[in-house]
Image (cartoon, rainbow, N blue to C red):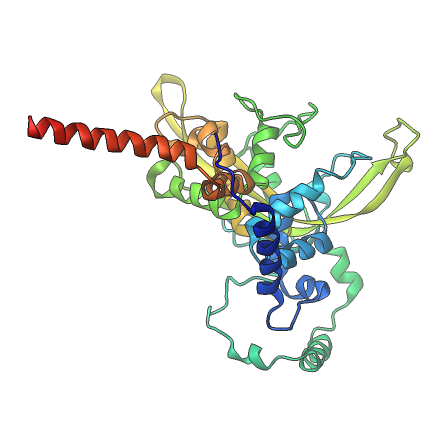
Amino acid sequence: MGYVAVKGGTQAIEESIKRLKFERVEQGKTIEIDRIKAGMRGLIDQVMSESSLYDETLAAIAIKQAEGNPEEAVFLLRAYRSTVPRKHYSRVIESSDMRIERRISASFKDIPGGQILGATTDYTHRLLDFQLMKETDESIKDWLKEYSSESSLDQEANDAAQTLPKVLDYLRKEGLLPPCDNNDQEPDDVTRDSLEFPSTRSQRLQILTRGQTGAVTSFAYSVIRGYGDLHPTVGELRTGYLPVTINHPTADSEDEADGYYIGEVKVTEVEMLMPVTVEKEYGKKEMEFEIGYGLCFGQNETKAIAIGILDYCLEYPNDEFPSHNEEFVLYHIDSVESTGFISHLKMPHYVTFQSKLDSVRKTKKDEKQEVRS
């Protein structure tokens, strides 16, 4: 693609960058990074998930720099991530070890350990709270003090109840679900090796979890609306913290004693139940359940559910539905790729457009000559 040189282009670009900063600070106020971390939990979780980088502080900086634009913030954070060396690989994390904050099932009313509603907007009225206009640091401290006194629980009993068994394990014990065998094959890394088709499940899950939240949700919604062939149910949804450990830097042993605990990451995990009809012997048909799995950074439940739906769809391809086509889905949900390509249309296309324009002019001229003749 050719571009026509623009005189004074460098100076114009520099002034444009200055203007961008002016638009951010023109009211003479700024948002502190700590306040972004404290008050924009949902946005931070979304940006971390789509960036494949778990760091609330860096996500907050990106959000501030992008003026709250999630696509730009993800672009910034992924660019930074590409400059950071990878020093360690964590050990395999068992999600059953999650320190749970929230845990529900839409399939069963009574589950082992009970339903834990935790923090959710599911039961709010979605009405604007105009009291937030009067909220101050002092009023928040007073509310926190009152809340702490009202919810004084036995912390030891609370901690003991936070690690809970998986709901679907009980279905497997009853023989209602097939056993889930461990796959010890080393997973692919889409951040280092380009996606290839047919893709592996590890590639698909990585692309889905770092996909643009709205795009992933929309594709999953299309499945339920008729561009797919299933209507799933949430078997279990859990939000909480997973412990991360690494091996001793100088030892090859996987012994527990040689591991180092380096922290924990907050994630949302969903196991979806997919009703399927299976043909048995002599043409007899029976209903069984398959599993769709979703996991992403932070508390991002809608995305995790959507990942679970698309995981199942891509595991069982169907040319009849675009939502079951891995190339169609995986190539179109990445926020950086899609935003970058759409945005590049703003760049100079003078030569190519002039070529098209000349073609249109010639066609119009030929038409006029034909009419005259």
